Amino acid sequence: MEGVGNLIPCVSETRWHGGSDLPEAWRITAGQHDNVTLSKTELEDLNMKLTRRDMFRAAAVGPFVLTSRAAAARRPNFLFLLTDDQSYRTLGLTGSPFMRTPSIDRLGREGVLFTNAFVAMSLCAPSRACFLTGMYPHKNGIINNQLRWNQDLSTLPRILKEAGWRTAHIGKWHMDGDDRVQPGYDYWAAQINQGQYVNPRKNINGTWTNMTGYDTTIVTDQALAFMKDSRRAGSPFCAWLGFKACHGPFTPAPGHENDFADIEFKPPASFFIDDEGKPDRVRRKSQRLGMEGAANQETRAAKRAAKKAAQAGAPPENLERWAARERDQYRCLMGVEDSVRRILDFLDEEKLAEGTIIVYSGDNGFFHGEHALHGKMEAYEESLRVPMMLRYPREVRGGQRVDAFVANVDLAPSILDFCGLKAPAAMQGKAWRPLVTGKAGTKPWRDEFVYSMHNTDAARPTVKAFRTDRYKLILNLNPRDKDELYDLKSDPEELKNLALDMGNAELVADLKRKLASAMKQIEDPALAALE
Image (cartoon, rainbow, N blue to C red; front, side):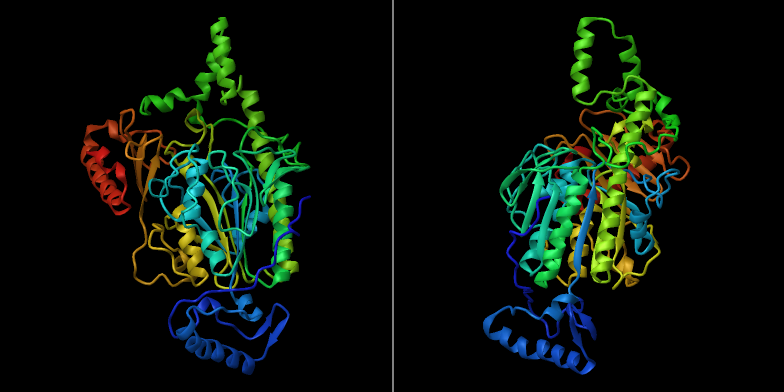
């Protein structure tokens, strides 16, 4: 496998801007730090020197550079594990009746499971851009999969690199076939668009390389090599892993080709319902209707149309093939389970677990037959809700379940907060560090969320949705179609559109007003579309 030996070890630098004391996240505690043992007296002396002598020096020469290996050990490592097309209930910890994912589940058991984690837009590139920038799609400019990345954008890895972290992007990047090495990384190993599960071709630090093996395994090998190099360099690291799994078409992970063979996969009840409360756009996507159409195709023109549709991801011919596709998707995810086990073992062996922040998340949710759908994008729960977990033993008590609304735009400001760095003003997300450390205070947290489904113009979205703890309002704007309102308490499967009942007109109007207010706060250009 392609290693990272060509990386140039960088000096452990952290630029600090003002204040009389070191940021709390960087202060040093007594004990063993990267093979440097500090007594209590030495600790007090070192912190005194850092907080007084270097402050005076900083006044004369500008931001000081912290070069102590012990101080570097105090700064957390950050490891982001991002899966593709993974809905919330696909893990043992999140309620799957058949998945056995002890390593992934371990992150939530030893840390935090966010039970209401949402994405601002359920599509690969827009969601990834939100994680990176802390901004909504209409602000970072990535509103679909066909837009080239703006290299002037400030991203979480870029900020960490400027502050002295060694940074890596490994795996799926997925920005309009953008094959450039992006700024802000010491190590770059990415594929264009989806890439391949088997023998992928990757851009490694500017050199295109044909790899041998299974993509999830390769990504893991590269990540372990990068972390080892960072360990030797005495630098904190930020490793951003983008797994291809579990995006289709599905090639099972090695060793898992026969998993779930004895499990009967059946579509949910809503698969068989032609729901008149849904907009025409959603009803036309029905996999069930697609199966029925395939069974009745006779003419040559119909067969040509079917072939073209198949290239774009047409429904399986029958329920048996639907079940086979489902099994293969979960078999891909089992490769990520293997990866997480290897990563956790490495952190334990190298005694890095205590000081490493790990966040695991899906880039978006996914439909497994709900509403007869396959894919994402639509504003129903299976699409916009993702499994998200955090583990950071140094600061975060294990075994927590956080029900507060968090979102992909919150990742960047949250990690910067843990690292003692101030988030840029342009970031729109909120740092959830107080939620998981028991220091939330009296400042109110988000209890509502705005979701968008864009096409080519952020001012003319296909969908705007507004989710509260109880209700979800979906406005189908372009093309205009019926509004949708669901009571998530009494109807969690979103089968009864209450907006069709005129008795709910005032509730719909109230939610529209709240949506408009929330859109105004995030400077959403589609606000005029609600009027």
